[in-house]
Image (cartoon, rainbow, N blue to C red):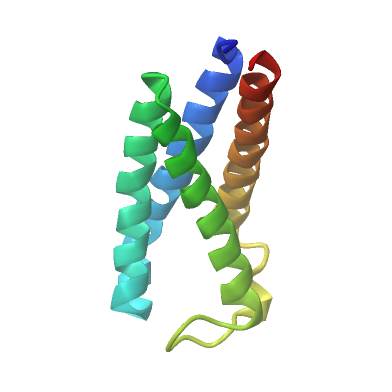
Length: 125
């Protein structure tokens, strides 16, 4: 199995940590909207730190945890603006909130790097 390039690994760590940090910074406001949403934002931050730790240690679970966090966050963002979340109405006018856009960029970057890391592993097998 060919190792993942250091550039891909460190960019992925930065992307997932950015996702987690953004969610931690937004958690306080999210708690005021719905307690479960704030708790999910905190869990996102903690999970992102754990994923970064796993990726740094070249553990496959770190990549998969990061994938779940990034993909789940991206899906949650889209759902919150289209169909709404449980006990929260849709926010169709909130697509371009700066922190939301920054989060989308970091999540998309992580997902691209995740695919890149999977290809490196399967090509080497």
